[in-house]
Length: 67
Image (cartoon, rainbow, N blue to C red; front, side, top):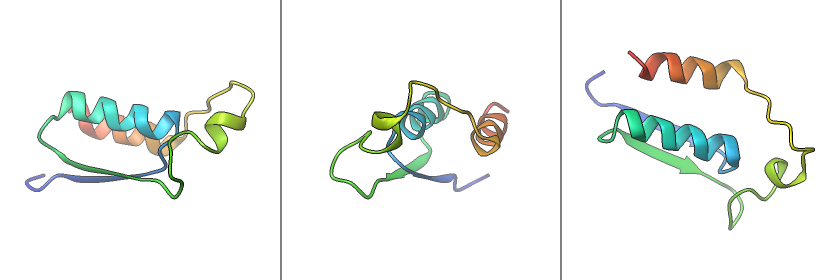
């Protein structure tokens, strides 16, 4: 992957944690977090019952970048 580029949609707790961990493993990667609100954690993160469900997509990203 010569020109690594990652776009994360959503700046909630899961999106930002994913961005943080990707940048920790690959500090030179080009990464963009897109958020429709004017602040982070405005929707699901702030309104859920404290349960964070990990989706298959996030697990897939971690598998790719752990190589």
